[in-house]
Image (cartoon, rainbow, N blue to C red; front, side, top):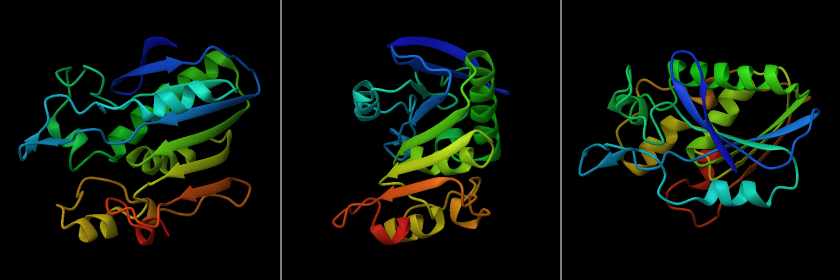
Length: 196
């Protein structure tokens, strides 16, 4: 995979491109929250330690791209980055808008006509939020995504994500967008009720 930095608005985003190209359909992969907290404080680098999403992307035979979140992948000390962007504001308007701007730049440069989102955990939350902003969206697939962040925080006994957008409170995606949301029956981190 080739890595590059793509400008969003106002953040930069690390992007990994798969080896296959297509002018028609692009699969966009979004990773989980990683390590937002460490020892009760915002982590110095929230980047996921495991490469599950990149591994899945490598198996995808289509044209693929991984869009990193603001301040992840070694950018936590960049201007405008602060711990709340990967803790309480991890799905905030500024995060979603910057990721949408970065993807818009990629789409305009590459010419894809259709976008299918694939998000794991918190990346699934972002996939649903971003899908509403990208008119080329044809599909959203999530795995273990906390799609109702209020119910998720309550179920976990965690602090509420006060600065974040809640997909469960947003207008539904259009009927022309294929959706599939996978949940594990014994998942204690993201129980099926939170996905439902």
